[in-house]
Picture 1 (cartoon, rainbow, N blue to C red):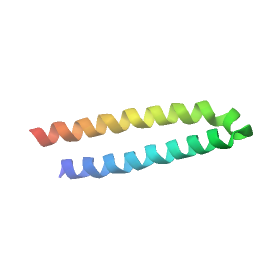
Picture 2: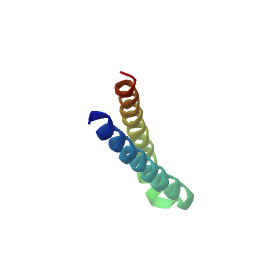
Picture 3: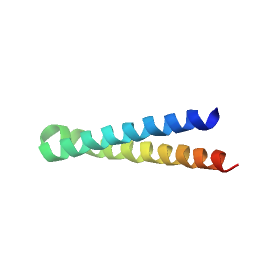
Picture 4: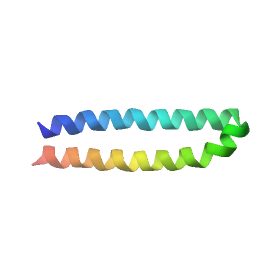
Length: 66
């Protein structure tokens, strides 16, 4: 049961990382005020989301291997 929950959580987190990345790239491509104000913030949120996603994926793999 826990492995299926972690798999779904990992998939949702991957989608969240993708959305954050798309918003960051879109803001960078458009430039202007949004990129100046939120560019670094989007990068920080993406890195945090990626870290959490990797931890969940590793937890999923660890549970599956037991």
